[in-house]
Length: 440
Image (cartoon, rainbow, N blue to C red; front, side):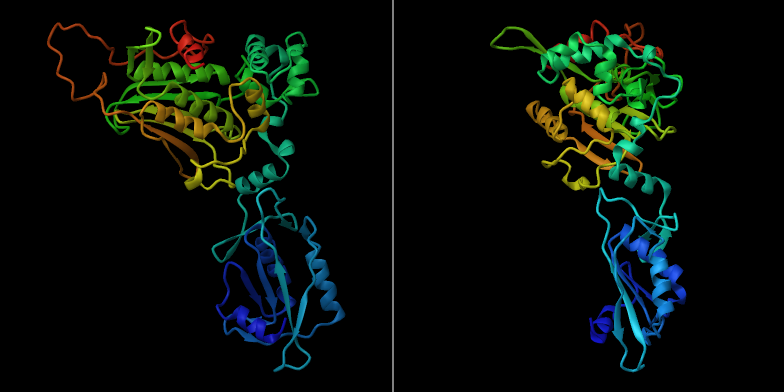
């Protein structure tokens, strides 16, 4: 590197990838910037430049200078191997510019800290990294050590887990060829251990979410359900909040769809059997709800998954994030699987309730297209992932365009419903065949 290279580097002033310091007397601030470069896009840290005038002045470099630089760099964790680049300054004989180039951060790398604090670049400003961002990066680097689903459940024992649900999953997995038949006779505790849903014989948070009958320790094992009048949230027709484990919430959500979406039927030519279907495909709704329950950020205890049915659309909102490897604009295209809760996702995959290889979104779209329904859309607002299904243009039970009822005319629909009880049977007799038989 020459003085001309330095001149070219600093020509556009400081930026997200360039930090200038007059001397190594500013080493501490310089190391904050270095840590930020390592946690963002990388960049240059250069000593010997006056930041305001961009004048290249350099500085004297002594043994003490080299020792101070080495001690400062030792404060970066994990250790980063880098050597300073010294460039002579012709206008100031004996002075040198000291330059460092730091590589950028990649998803899955361990986040860097300086003296125990993580820094990152927000535009061209160095800031302390928010706790949520730091924890997300730690999870990506070592998911089995930092993931909420892997911690031992507090207040939940093996006896609290619903054995019928677990056995049902095992049977589905055996029938689907994803679990060996020997699992049917093996102790359930052994199967849970193989699925990484126990730690030293204690259920994990993931096991509690999937199977626990005791949800008292978890305030966020809930699902909000609402049927709104019109296309906004100003007035609702039905408003519920239900609680339970994964299967309780799945059953409640699917029952709500059957309750508030139009159901049609026709006689098929081949079998002369009546074929019933919702206006939005059941397979698509079920897959989207399973994804929301499996991939949400359960550690965010003050947030809740919600289902909102409007006149023109259905929205499922999930407190979570899109994997950084998948830009939201590419979510409909083929991609790998990056489950937020890996052990829960693996257990559901073995049970055939969830597919791997990132095919869930493709199958949702495919189910909609088979039924002639518009493709759903996905968006993220910084806190929630939304999947939105457009409802076909039809008058439903609550449409304000329906003729006004005449006096004494029998009421076909109640204006609102009782609350769904906090615990659910596996599925009601009416819903069960639609959820499990109709979809196969």
